[in-house]
Amino acid sequence: MHITGTVTKVRLGGQGRATKLEVKSSYGTHIYSSYYGKVWPGMERIKTGDKVDILAERSKLNKNELFSGKSYYIWELKHQGQIIINYNDVINLVGDKEAIVNRYIHYWLVISFFLLIYALIRRDLQFSIDE
Image (tube, rainbow, N blue to C red; front, side):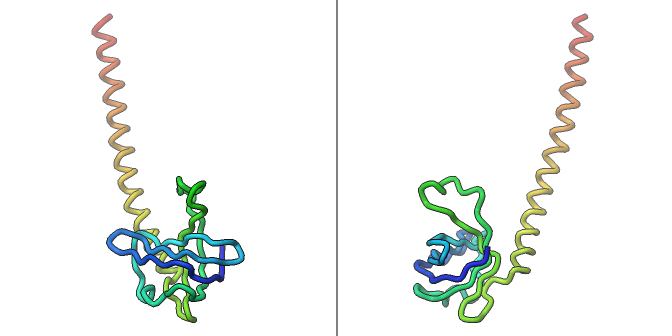
């Protein structure tokens, strides 16, 4: 979703906390967050009342959407004609993080498979001893 709107609130992140921009547009007022708590160079210049262009994706894992409203992740952010968050940089950042998570998921799947095989063999051995 591409929106052009006015910033109504800014909360700079850092150290694992996402930067959040509350932006009023023709779609309503929503919260737009940066990925993984990264503060991109130039974000500190964004002030309340500034116009921004944002390419965003809806946060599908927002548990509090009923109370806090819809929230979105920023894929690209333009402020005063400058690209603050570049789409390609976000793709690389998200891809790297997902690759790490996928690696650990694969490890757990392999370990779980071997534990299942061990449990089945043990059950079969126990069953044959009881006969």
